[in-house]
Image (cartoon, rainbow, N blue to C red; front, side, top):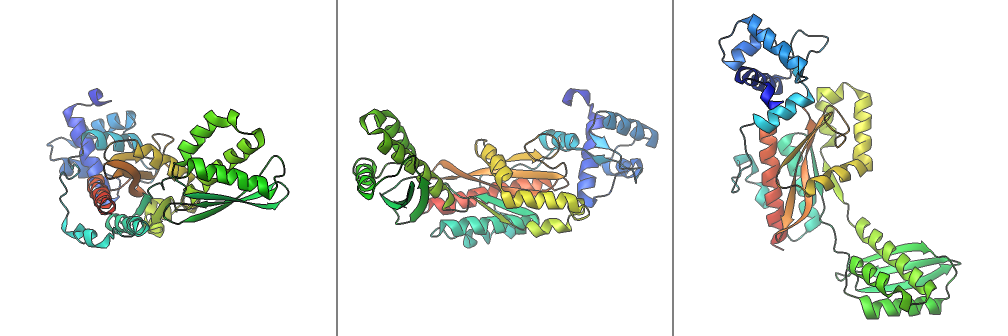
Amino acid sequence: MKRMLDERARTLLKALVERYIDDGQPVGSRTLSRASGLELSPATIRNVMADLEELGLIASPHTSAGRVPTARGYRLFVDTMLTAQPAHPIEVPPEMAVAREQLHPDQPQRVITQAAGLLSSLSNFVGVVTAPRKAGVFHHIEFLRLGERRVLVILVAPDGDVQNRVIFTARDFGQAELTEAANHLNQHYAGLSIDEVRERLRHEIEALRGEIAALMQAAVQAGSEALAESVDQVVLSGERKLLDVPAFGNDMGSLRRLFDVFEQKTELMRLLEVSSRAEGVRIYIGGESQVVPFAELSVVTAPYEVDGHVVGTLGVIGPTRMAYGRMIQIVDITARLVGNALSQR
């Protein structure tokens, strides 16, 4: 794609995308002539625009003679024409200077909530942050018989946090058997991570009675799920701001589907999980892949680190027509601020 465009076409595409991002109106050849600074005849510009349209980089809305960028056009712009780069080292713009004071390292969940709000207020779109995954370590475990084949698992974390989970067992266990299994886990596995316990149980399963081993495995799975759910994994802020975006506000069907995504959070988690494995800021443009399910949507993300380890992802969710250079800077700096605040703990 890059080789198929000459410098003139690239200049015109860049000018068209920037102009459309600025005012949201389809760009005509006369406007593009002024915006690009190229001394070209209207006929020449129309020919180039026709070529760009044939390549799928711009499109013509039915109600206008002007053109707008497509997802492919935005992608080419973002990948090869965007001049803004993430600030390195941190250069906090004036409007973000207060951010350092807003993030309180003594309360990690509060940092996450404030960061989502900060991203939303600075971008005027939706801010999203995944909370750091809790270390799946248990300090103490207890089993309580609730009834036939129903057992309450009580899991105590090192910080005193208590999680309860009901599991259903293949056979009925007496309380004495449950106490025996709990004592075995507390004696041999306390202080290990859930993953380490699961791995050791897998290797030691032959040394344990089959029923007790199955009970322990079910308890470990329940403990893993309980710890994962003990923190709100995805924090969102500013969803209502999308009501003011014409691309969404005028299409209640799209808006409804979008809010379903926000509510269920499954697709968001999948996207942010992909982002956490990437380095630096990433931009996902709707319509170009299955990662972002809406053609009118773009997501700008970055992972954040605590003590040198990536523990979560944050970003901005908004329309494809967004000021990408500014969003990159907002997301990049916020990721660094959150990482610094949580590392200070």
